[in-house]
Length: 106
Image (cartoon, rainbow, N blue to C red):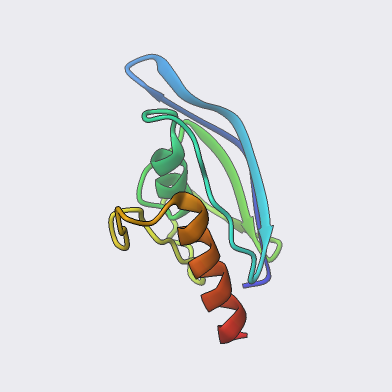
């Protein structure tokens, strides 16, 4: 995978808009973090990108290939917060750990 482009993502639950025209783009090898309050739609956005959840509207491309509704995106990886969490580490320390690990893998 070389490039992920997400645009115009809209999602509502019971007539309450959770995501409104969300835009995201990233290149292969980039480490991207989604930060926000509880319930603001971070996990929902990832589920939509990965094809696990339907959006009211979405436009997702990987390497200029349009990903259609309910398609699973090959080549994408997500690390959920509950998979690796050490309460003694501060967010900055945890991010530095993953950045250093990513540098060593290249």
